[in-house]
Image (cartoon, rainbow, N blue to C red; front, side, top):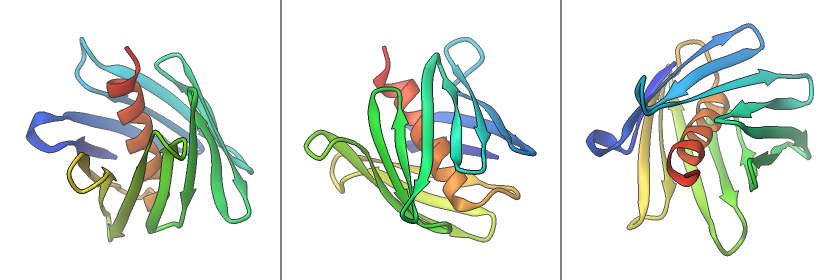
Length: 141
């Protein structure tokens, strides 16, 4: 799975889905950050740039956290959700069309687009990877 976050001014995201494991990198070889996630029977867990990532299935949604930020995602090929709390946070909306995922994190004015070639991965995995990439690359110093 490959993609780009925030167009020409943004950064690349590359990862591989190997069985139940998602291993990848956001950014370049020198200034990039790595992530390793595992899909379990009840959700996804792992690390991204030294932060814990843990989400589990609850009432039809993926609920959990990336580092210290709350995360909620709903849907499979049309995914909506939120990263962060109710006051300070980012809404996300994305749509899978075949092997392509197109989405936006944040609002109309202050938001960032992302686009991924999913390969064989479902849309929700692409959205989760996009949120992990955004958080570890832009929000963690």
